[in-house]
Image 1 (cartoon, one colour):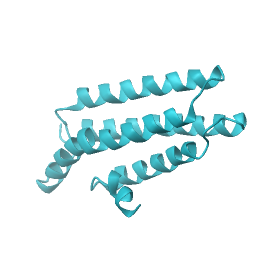
Image 2: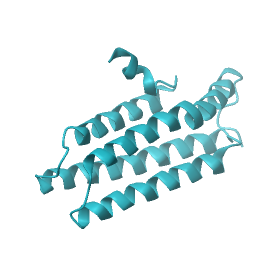
Image 3: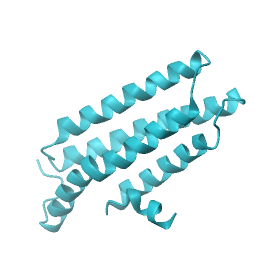
Length: 137
């Protein structure tokens, strides 16, 4: 389990803490293989939706501040993941949500996204900070 805990560490504390919270939310879904308590699941899904939006906005703001060249591709990836999540919300509304499939999607997406896309902007921002290029224009 200790190895899994490192899956989201990018080296930007502001993003690492957000990833940590997202994983904790996704882990809660994993513990509910079937929706038996709609009120609980609805509350959890709303929190995930709100926090994903906050997280995407935070990352995109950071990338814009440092003129990250891969911004549009990264933003597109966020949009695609958000759209896929909305389909799961639609499934919940129609009483056909598969929590296991949702958990696998969210956790898998964040792991892959962090290891690839997030690692790229993290490297860029860390270089800018080392070089004293703060909030470039």
